[in-house]
Image (tube, rainbow, N blue to C red; front, side, top):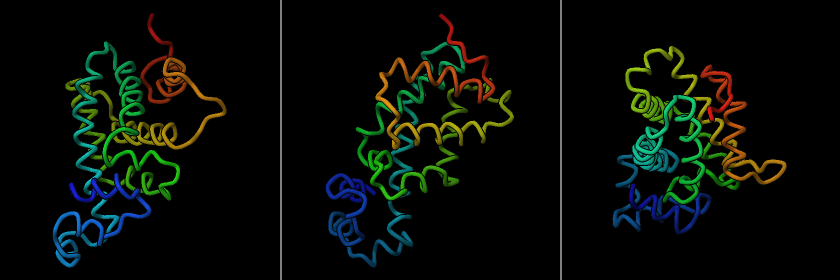
Length: 181
């Protein structure tokens, strides 16, 4: 998986092949196919590992904020800052990734990581969120949209924060969307 991430960084998503990964790992292609059915499966596993590491840092960051609404907004902003610079995950934020990021982001394994992060973030409070699966899915969809689609005009982080509080927070059932002063 380290070799897969290195190849993604070196060649990009479209040009990374199993031969490249095998060469970087110092093994043969048949050896890789003993563990992974396809290139997409291998890359999804590598990205899952990178996603779990990012999730740990995200929880540490977001716990600093007082309310679940603030924590989720800051978690999204953290991802928007970190994913484009994260080895391996940056490919998911590229609009040229042929939809790979979107295909991987909503797989059961990715949703499981998101649910785990939300559970870690909310702790005992997570029990009050009956629809934690939907919250995880919506958060991923918001992040993908903000990472891969250009808006009508560039927004500063404070503008995105305000947008998330106005539109995402109420949609998730976490309050009125008015940011506390």
